[in-house]
Image (tube, rainbow, N blue to C red; front, side):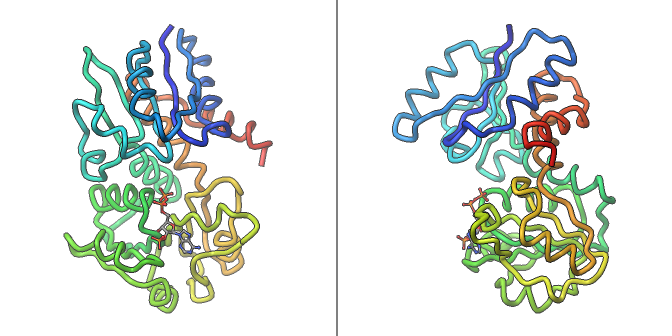
Length: 272
Ligand code: ATR
């Protein structure tokens, strides 16, 4: 039996096992995917134990995407550039690190339409998820990219090596009508009690694509306001499914059926 896991903390609510096991079952593969809680204090010992346990590959989620790096032999380009790994494969006794978050996001976005050099994209947030998406967009598209963040220095740091632009959230809010795509990556929408968007969408143009990487809740305050103003909206479910599908392909060489993976996730979420 081939063993795969996802590690993180917290990990109990991860939807990856349901999503990956659906595909293993569908393909009749003798493989199993489980979640493993790792404590931050004992990460080094626990990760070594896991890597010696016969596991063939694993996913890594918060807060260990950077801490895994010293345990790997080689990094794929996007993982090296972002300094963060979400997928690991063992091959001929070597450990390879990948980052499928950014590419997964881009595949989801391109389910709406392809991205061209006419696009001007705003990313709100400058944390790990933002960086992965920024790298995928700068690597795979010709769009003009602007990063806006509460802590403006982080946005400046992220964009300084190329021709892209950094703004404060307030500046971005005023210039909102200039963007054809707005990507929300901050964690603010996760807190249902706050029910807030990092920027007001009052100036968004009708038909702008507004995309949030959060999928639970299915519709954040950002997406609600975007929809009200006539934007085309997308939540984080396509990104989640596609990052998982790309990981599956890295492990098995098989392109999995994304609609089945999505179905498995929606079942876990209660069909919303
Ligand atoms: P992730 O890995 O999910 O990207 P992260 O690296 O902790 O998480 O980044 C969180 C992002 O959400 C950051 O851009 C953070 O802004 P700061 O860099 O200023 O901290 C942003 N964020 C979190 N809470 C926010 C809030 N209440 N308003 C605006 N931005 C917020």
